[in-house]
Length: 122
Image 1: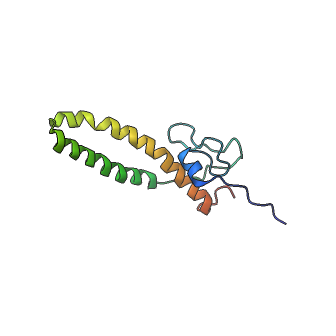
Image 2: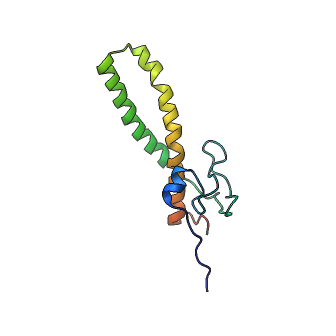
Image 3: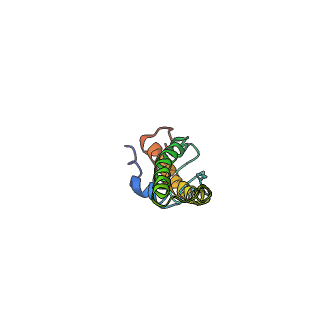
């Protein structure tokens, strides 16, 4: 008789809190976006986790629509000079990109673990 499969954390917990997709307790990242090699709590081998370009493309599409929409609204509402647009928009764009990228990449890693896309954790 085989052992029961390990209990997995809900997807939203793994993604939103950037936690291990199996236990949902240990942080997924070592640095800003570097996935750790192994979960220190449950021992899940995360070296095979590869989210590819999916999260980056998703963040670029989502953020470009939001930021361009806001820039157009500011332009038509207040008509500031162009240099103000050049100073105003890069900082919130970079901050939001990093804040959205971490959970997006964690979601891709959790989905990869759930669907066993790379035999990760087997």
